[in-house]
Image (cartoon, rainbow, N blue to C red; front, side):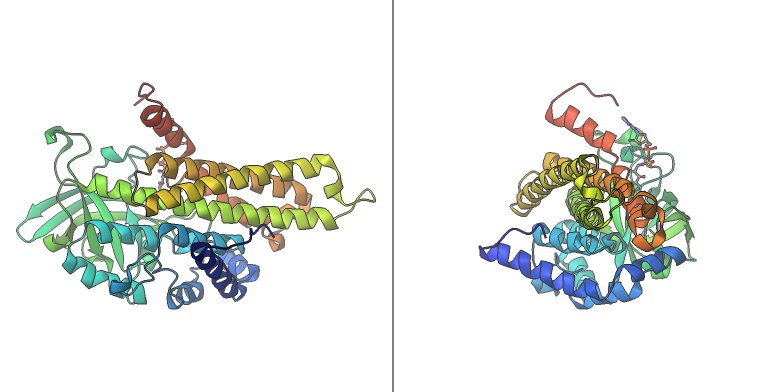
Length: 392
Ligand SMILES: Cc1cc2nc3c(=O)[nH]c(=O)nc-3n(C[C@H](O)[C@H](O)[C@H](O)COP(=O)(O)OP(=O)(O)OC[C@H]3O[C@@H](n4cnc5c(N)ncnc54)[C@H](O)[C@@H]3O)c2cc1C
């Protein structure tokens, strides 16, 4: 409906990916997602299909068995999942957490994990960063990793570790040098690959958190968990830097999911506004209904441009912090606006589960808060781009 004509090879690849994901998503219609939502179930069949089609391994280089494409293409894959009424969050972490191993892991780690992640033998879906007391202030995390011989001993707690019960591996951020002993406040944190199949019951406990969306999120407790020293990624103490790069990828991919949500809301709402008639004309003829839809569409298209700007800069290896954050901000705002407008357009029927508006409304709200809240993006742009005084 909103697709531009394509011409260059790059655009042809994007269009082919869009068509491929649309075909796959035809096997997972709204009823599938609605039922999962009602039962809090994990979409095993969808994940299997995405893995077999190679979509979840799109960013893994071909030499490790993946698709070898860039974040631009990967973002289109996730966008199309959400645009078809699904929820790519159930599997998106595999894309951006994998990048931390790819960029900073040893060759041995890449050969050990990436081909198995690519072919689906191993799931890397858990990203353990947030902690209850630190919240948005990642540098304040208290989970520690203390080196003892050939192991690190992990103690502490993570919260909101999504998909931990559906993942074989976790990328974990922990403190290896006390805050008081580091020269730069961004140092002293390290990243580990944790094999959850070995860890659960041997120092790791996972507890689900019931939430307003079907997100499979958990609390994870570490009590003298032994992680082999060889599972440290890159250099000890440099983990915050590694995580930040992964977070830029995450912001761009999640921006794309928001864009997909936004188009889904506007397509549904426009169709409904054309067919629903209560005062002899379709409700969409009333400007009180039509203009909010048009405004949401304009904002969505603008966010979409910023998404592609960020993705292309990322793929060219350029510094992308501001663009990744702005893309996430604009896309999350646009999808939330579209969600509200769709809900209003559907009137009472927006509340009925069978129309899926309320489900997607709940799902897209998350992106105002996670993986980074809109306020923290504004603070980042204010302080790092506009060089305004720091508030924290
Ligand atoms: C469903 C779900 C899934 C998640 N999945 C994961 C995951 O897989 N892995 C993971 O590590 N984390 C995950 N998270 C955590 C998520 O990244 C955090 O919730 C988010 O970073 C915000 O942290 P917080 O919830 O502690 O909010 P807080 O940091 O407590 O902030 C609360 C509010 O205060 C505002 N605020 C805080 N500080 C400032 C400031 N300086 N200036 C202005 N406003 C401020 C924030 O904008 C926010 O609105 C998930 C969260 C949810 C809800």
